[in-house]
Length: 285
View 1 (cartoon, rainbow, N blue to C red):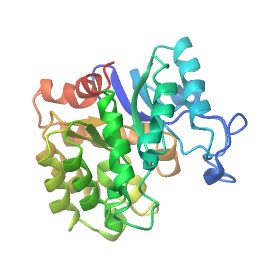
View 2 (tube, helix red, strand yellow; view 1 turned 120 degrees about the vertical axis):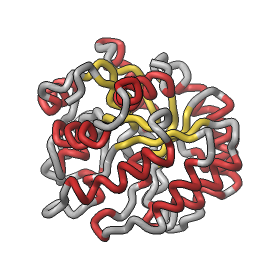
View 3 (spheres, rainbow, N blue to C red; view 1 turned 90 degrees about the vertical axis):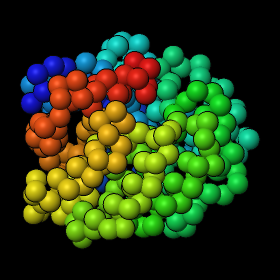
View 4 (tube, rainbow, N blue to C red; view 1 turned 180 degrees about the vertical axis):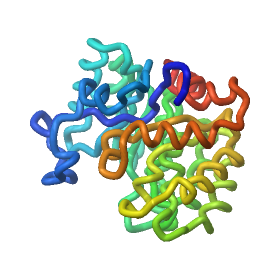
């Protein structure tokens, strides 16, 4: 385990009794409150000095209320250092109203609009989507890419990044490669191509969720992590738990231990950057 406190760059905090999250309704693990007290219990001996809240796909029309609720939590607990809020960037120039409202929140650092469930792999290349992302970048906010490489979404996202050179991007969950199917290719080549864009960093998160929950192994995960490290270097990757979605398949401490093992060969300064330094810089913590 790391011998210092860490920054968790990907945490979901929510209460389904306060705001509606239809996608998780009836899920025995997720459909209940998940706040800082529950996170602390899950993390156990892992010391989290700061965390980044990432939007939780709240039902349409509630995204501003979700971000404001988390800002109220951050006002009471400074460990919540950054908010990545949802904005429907496919509205193009019309996103300005939402961005104006969100930038009143001191902790706002980024925007995410989920791509992963869109049936058209090139959804993110529509003119209005690109325009919306450019406007996010113009405000100094990062744009988070949550997509599924196995659905052909990684290559179009790379083209989106090229069309928005002044926006900083964060790739969630290594691009969700199809681990359960043993799918290293074409993910490896596509990730390497994305990593050639200097305005992208990658979260080492969410990988076990893409594996077979009944028989995944650490050895199975290692090639994905090592390839991401090779492509981006320790200067452009950062730890994220994806808690509590991660709780469907593994303990919080399990992912920390796996990543710690993979990072063991790096110099101490490089390991520190992955565990907290890079997230501090990207999210201005």
